[in-house]
Length: 392
Image 1 (cartoon, one colour):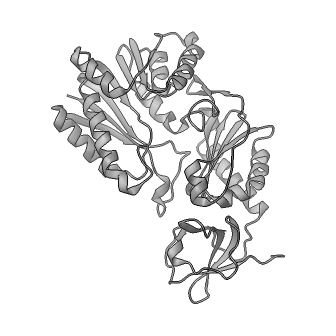
Image 2 (image 1 turned 120 degrees about the horizontal axis):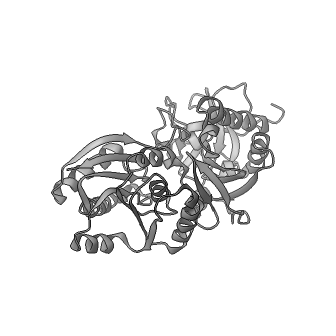
Image 3 (image 1 turned 45 degrees about the vertical axis):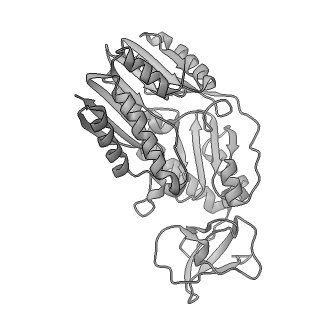
């Protein structure tokens, strides 16, 4: 390499394949590189460990990107790695045959720690989770342009990430929404007006599976956001569809999504602005019962110390949701809280069934679509838990 990278030495032996190395294991260099700088990493004995991002301000001090000492992490490295991620989606998964909306880069799952990219037709939505990816964003943009000629960008980073990683980014100018199609259903993806990426592409296969079991049924879509499950249900022949969410802004998008699919026939979904807790209590008091109940709440916590309170909240909402499920109903419940494991989520569901006096028969346990891969040795990239049940 023409310009040697700064060298960062570890305090203790490193025998893990995980790409994250935490601050307490890293010697503080005499001259600290800027957050997100590319560095070479050596062990306590001076042996080569890898090459990646350094951030002396972050709990994750090092993010290993490359373990071959002969391979530079430069602009061409980013181009190759992003091309490989796109090839996985296009050539192996053949996602273009299903949708023009899919995850292009899934952070550690694609060897690009700290970067998420979603595609919505010609609009690419980027989210930076590390100072390194933010610092080298122009390389990333250029690599994406090679794969998606003529694409538009919308980029952002959560405030808590910017504080943890020590960088400032106000985000790009709001992009115009994109109209996407998946399994023949159309949606408006609006990263400036709804969820930070504009649409939950991770639920694509779960929406399709559930929609094949709703014909003639009464469907309740709780925490419906922009109407994904409800719009699918209406287009697939449900007799009645009700969506509940506390955010009126996303409900306006949901109503627009229902109109986009009006030509497909089916009922017109009813979207209601409400807190699901009092709404469900009132519905149960009225004796309301639904044949299909979907519960897909937002992430409950990013703090390990708040996992138990998060599980308690999941328990409360699942108990209430089971209370309006008709005998034999299909119940789909989800968690996108990465800190809650699948075993913990299933344990919560068991308790919710017990306390609500219902028998829950688990039919299918799933997660995000295959465009959200995770490495076996980096389970942190796996976050979505999906459980489909029959309620006796």
